[in-house]
Amino acid sequence: MGRGVPSYVCQQCGAAAAKWTGRCEACGAWNSLVEEAAAEAPPLGKGVSRGTRGKAIELVGLKGETDAPPRIRTGVEEFDRVCGGGLVPGSALLVGGDPGIGKSTILLQICASVAASGAQALYISGEEGIEQLRLRASRLGLAEAPVQLAAASALKDILPTLERATAGSAPSIVVIDSIQTMWLDALDSAPGTVAQVRASAQELVAFAKRRNVAVLLVGHVTKDGQIAGPRVVEHMVDAVLYFEGDRSHHFRILRGVKNRFGPTDEIGVFEMTGAGLKEVANPSALFLGDRSGRAAGVSVFAGIEGTRPVLVELQALVAPTSFGTPRRAVVGWDSGRLAMILAVLDTHCGLSLTGHDVYLNVAGGLRIGEPAADAAAAAALVSSLYGLALPADAVVFGEISLSGLIRPVAQTEARLGEARKLGFRQAWLASSGEAGQASSPPRVKSVGALSMRSLGHVSELVDLVREESAPIDAVRGEPAARSLA
Image (cartoon, rainbow, N blue to C red):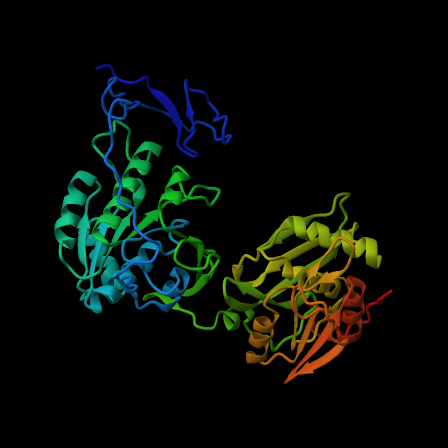
């Protein structure tokens, strides 16, 4: 039986080519094509040929006769929140993130917590030895946890071991660190290649379904922040979680980008300490920091991350430039939306920023994706342009359209409730309180201790910034004699 014709597979996107080229035509990556031998084709009349009749599959109803098994609570509430209430037995999760962000740390803490509750926890590492894992556990204070360890990368040895260890046992979790180090001897390609990652993930997902075990896979990421390997791996697993954050900051954000058993875009916030990752129950207080001082160009945005309301500080700096092309720099927000906000302020409010450099930063390293931050960004830009300090007790949110109208956003009550909880007394928002409502509240409306200022157009936001803000010298913290013309 002859072997199939070898093909060249891109290690970034998984696209196949008939011959080697320096650049992948599918994703544009350079020097990413690796030769992989094609699988042997079955002879005519056997295998999946038309002459073979398959076995009939038994069909069942949508409503089961037995109750679903309970979720496995990891004891790490922020992780359980992102998963939708805990790990589902028989599910496969893929956890990705930058090197050193804390993937192995949080998974080792989860294994220790699950094992302490009486369930079985297995940690298989293809990157570290047993003594290295024990050293990490000792540093985290988990040396006495009843976690079963192994250092291996060959699935022909790992799968029989897992089958034997989980046979007839309590609900278990298995951590594979990492999927890029696993390999099958049936394939000729090296570990980490597209074929090996795809085949290894398929075997581990099948094991999770067969043994009703929760399997957590660690995935490396590329320089673009995407999980390395074929995208089909993300489709095969039940949930994909990303660790975000800058290693220079002391906190980490775990975000769910895919979850078949819970909400997507849910976040869990952790603080990196010497004893591992510590849960942050109130992330708004962490992102806001100390607000005792007042400075120009700072606004507080009431956002929604998944199902959780989060208050975060937006910082803007508008400075005159001596260059012909002003600079626009954004950290934590969409640069395209910043360009749109600047165009709207120029067209509908007469605020020309063509001779200014503009910098916008989301404090704490959080990344904001919802358009509800438009109004907060515009308020910070106007505040910096005029040297005015916004009220320290005001939150701002609303979507700005190209016509200059401020549109209402969803989950207004959750945003306002978080603002009340943290002691804010003002809320600047769109004229309609909730997206889709036709009624418009009056311009000023008090709900409890919170005074809501309704805005219909971005020009009203600019006027409100001028009325409610105080001039501040950005260097000395003293009143500045800066013209508002």
